[in-house]
Amino acid sequence: MRDVRYEHLGASLYVPATHKDLAGILAHGRDNARSLIFCTEDAVSPETVTWAVSRLAKALRDSPAPEHFLRFVRPRNPFVLNQLLSAPGVIDAIDGIVIPKFDATSAGDWQKVLEQHNPALPVMPTIETADIFTEAGTLSTLGAIQQLQNPVPCLRIGANDLLGTIGLKRQPGQTIYDTPLRGVMERLITLARPAGFEISAPVCDLFGEPETLSREVAQDIAWGLWAKTCIHPQQIEIVETLLSKSLREQHPQASALKERSEAVFQANGQMLEQTCHQHWAKRVFALHAAIAQ
Image (cartoon, rainbow, N blue to C red; front, side, top):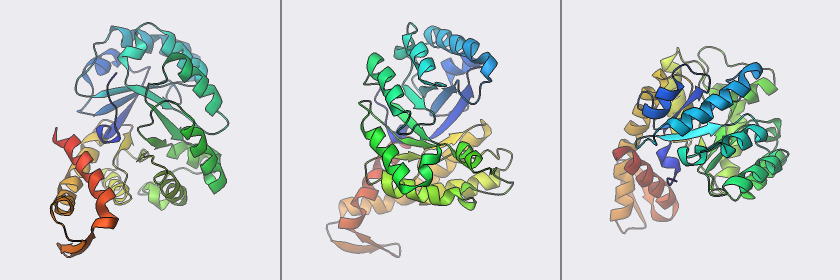
């Protein structure tokens, strides 16, 4: 099992388990995505779930382990997770699990299956239930995540589910920061990051609007979100290009903090302070090293 870290994720492409070229994408990846998430949840209609799960398990068993990208599965529910992890060869063929609709209520059912099969398998809980709309609910969800034995490379944000909960749909030209979810994301960042959790930015489902996606990724980066869900292959290059460009721009200041001994100094018109900015600099180094590989 490979060591899965936040900086390895980059643009994560969702692929329905019903995709016509499932076997090819499992084996060879798609459009240089650094991570792929094979979904049996919302992307699969109820009447095809059984077929999709069986098809995904077989394709994973038959596919050679890739070297240049990570493979995750997104089960529909704990029952489907048990089906997948019980299938021969599946655990050895994946790098982790993306758990949908994770909260304190569902946590126990997920945890039971994970502990039964492999408590070392990395998991990424998706935060997309109404609990996240309150501070108490957010803290309860984070507490449930902290009870997991499995490593948690990051938390994912299910923006469409959250918007659907309040009867909204993103409109053309809107970034996620132009919707009521801005406050939800602020709360999650300020509560989850101090608790040690990284966060992946949500999908921009306006895949025909590259300018909107670019504006959204710029805001993701400003808020310290260095991984992002993608639902269309043409989004991958945009996300990865912007992530790489920003890391190259930030790397010199991070290096200055490492190389200089002054407590406070200026670089390119900005104040840098050793006690305040070391955590930021370490993240930049780790992320920059990942894209430089």
